[in-house]
Length: 231
Image 1 (cartoon, rainbow, N blue to C red):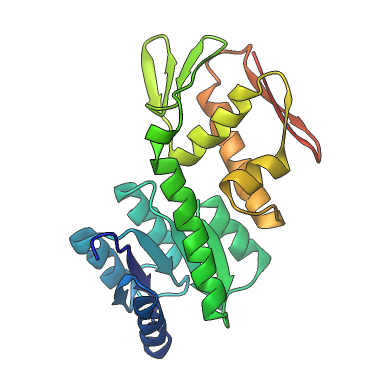
Image 2 (image 1 turned 180 degrees about the horizontal axis):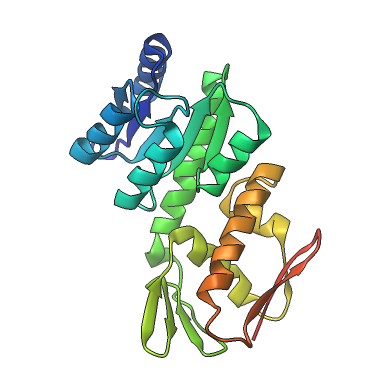
């Protein structure tokens, strides 16, 4: 099956890792299992992956640090944190680092599978640039080219991530009008909830920094409603 997606699981509980590997294999994925952070990083660097499931509490490199190192190699790879750590600050850290989801143990395998497929579908939609018309949008002194994921200011090019590009595209398409948080979250995170909302806040902050060279450009926050891109 040439279209099979490869999932890398980094989980130090050998029994759980084996059961999860068997479940995802029977669900149609190619699966590699590593049992500590160092082995997980080596497996990714050697064999690659289309998706990572990472335990936070790992021997060697911890899960948060591991994700940061993996994302340096592949900034767009989807990542789910799977962990027994359910404290709010841990979840926020996972999302603020750019994790796509955070699932606490014990978990339902069918729910995990649904979340994996939902995340993959969103990434695959982002990859299908041929099906989306290119938008060139002037934002103050910036030129935003969606197909190239480029934000250009005085011949200096910044390459945006998929998620940054998606959020800015929606803001730009509705420039000087309110874009509702719920619309952004449902379109690009799959659901409107507290933790995804915090992840959206991180991307809005990144976009503000990227647009900081033109003082006339702003992304205004409308509390409890959404955002307005102004220039």
